[in-house]
Image (cartoon, rainbow, N blue to C red; front, side, top):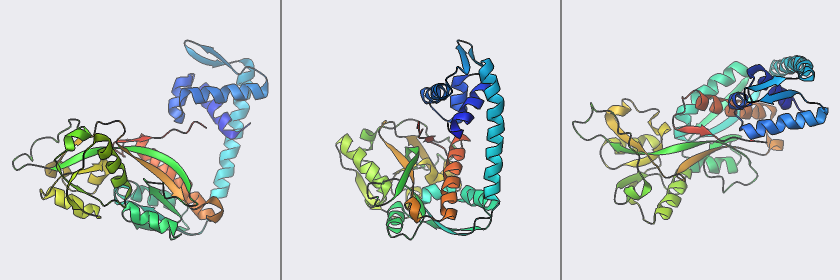
Length: 315
């Protein structure tokens, strides 16, 4: 029996619905149902009565529910006691510029609240440079997009981001709302594009998409600086393909750019939380990894990470 099974069971009883509980717990319903069935098998008793109107606890389930609540409260107290032991040390975290614009400050705030004696060393760079630093063990943790060059990393997919064609506003259009139409990759043939170089995760994703669409992009510049790249687009030198987070630090983005979502189902960017292997991480780094994942999920659920959806882990 695992604590997560108790947590799942308590939430199902509290909400009276398997589907609502699955949504609340960020699980697919089949995975939640499987966990509850496994729990009932371990206890050799029926805990829930299922009907078209929802679920209700059996007599045994109600007794188990009360004890499970108590156990979870004790577990939370144990977690707080561990957190109050005051972890110390320095943890190095690498983020690509687009990711840093969404995740950087929330992560620092959460760490200050939960582990005030842990000092973060934050590195913002293009994803290819962050990858090199992680492989060189100059970082403990990083959020990356292309994990094919992983050596002894621990890799946990976190979320997927939609990609958008971002173009400069035409003169006289600054008062109009941004274009929200969908764009297919095939429509980018002949469009002057400004992209990062091939060493970076986003470019790898886009090159694969161009290959599927059977054309080569019309590149007018390759820029490995997000700020400079967006300035070049704003100046009318070309368009770019980026996640929504690329607009995160742009002032008056709606007045400077127009954008449309890339409609092709395979064209998205996967964000993975990568770290050195667990035996190489300090307790402070292990704690930071948990906080980073929690922050990312909360930003997606609250709608602050626009265009992103969580990757569900059923197990």
